[in-house]
Image (cartoon, rainbow, N blue to C red; front, side, top):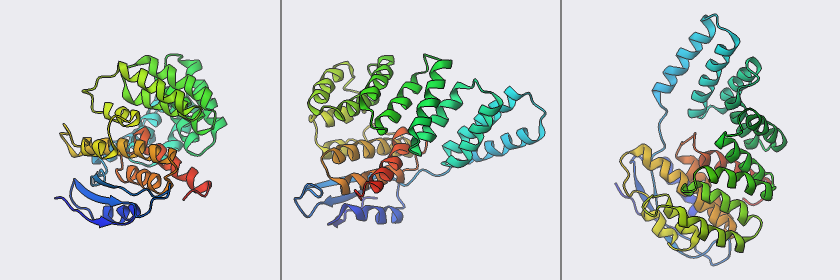
Length: 304
């Protein structure tokens, strides 16, 4: 089902989302002023019904709980169970319960690198950047080849307003897979926080290693200026085979579109795109996690 509604404010999308019962819908949006915060243009924004909770994960949580409570296990084994249950809580969006289990796991097994990685993310989301750096440092001390510790520490440094150091970590993350468009985008964001012109030149260079047939390349093409916002939005359903895949793609696109509008000073549009990313319920994605942090930061700065 497609719904076309002419609206004056992008912000009304969240009301429509609550009414949407189809897996795919399209909304016509327009800004009614030409100020930097509300540019005049019209785009069709696709969206999907939020992902439902996975009952299999809920059943798995119950099974892990029985094992933890009933089995007599060595500390290392118990730590793994807490870690596994924590990941399930994380996938269900139950972050406080996940953090409790991760803390229990690290107390039982102090050399558990994966747990430090998750705890670092949680500290970043709480804007406790010094603690986050400590967690990611611990990961890399235990495993210097842990790719995602470089990503997550880089993101923590980015939000902690240390973009030069963030760029170093995010470049290290990109070096593991130079053909990954998402890694390219995070390097670009860190560079843009320092020097927009250098970031744009670097983006053009990094894009040469990417496959244009990969859908995520369109995100890079958008930041390069090769395609428009509407072109990007219109391509979101290309090759999609499931509602789950579509929701994931929307979560990513909404986040990066929000970052683009944020950089241009379009705070209202940026805020609404971040909220749309959250509306997908793709709890495990980087873009979902940091959309919430972005909104918290904007609120704290009075930008909302």
